[in-house]
Length: 229
Image 1 (cartoon, rainbow, N blue to C red):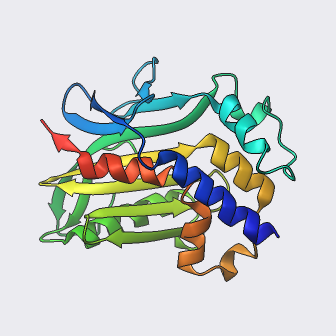
Image 2: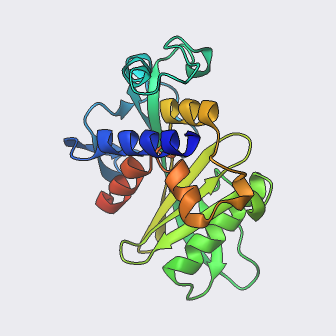
């Protein structure tokens, strides 16, 4: 039954994104243009270093609508986990320069450059990014990743502790990075739990389980639309 609920939750979350009208947004002092679903607006707060965040509000309304379909979850629309800002989903963008390096690859979140082997492919660049990302969250054992060679978009998702998902796409000598989350989907996933032990899940099952919480549809569509100025 829990397995069925997880599949239902993912399907509902992704369906809400599909076909939603988008709007062109300019970020990072005009250097980046992306298309985001209507309703996503820049977060009215001081810039988070070299990153800029866009948010979609209406968390409580979205959760209340889901309760009719997921009656077995002990979640209230005023759940404190959602915070007082009523943010339903968020996506944070950063631009990172790709620098050829003879030594090992390396990057720390917030740095303006990612060191990669000279001549590295897009997939190898994504691997270096995900390795650096996973080191912050306990190592590769707690992270799963994949790279869509057709679209040039990589994903790296942390599955233990604080839920975090990172997506990337290379444009020339710059890596466009988006870290994203849907707070409502994360809350529902936490209440449901996985259908079986996390480390017994296949890569496909993990992605099926976590993609709605990672706000993947929004993040990947944004990266595919990304233009540098």
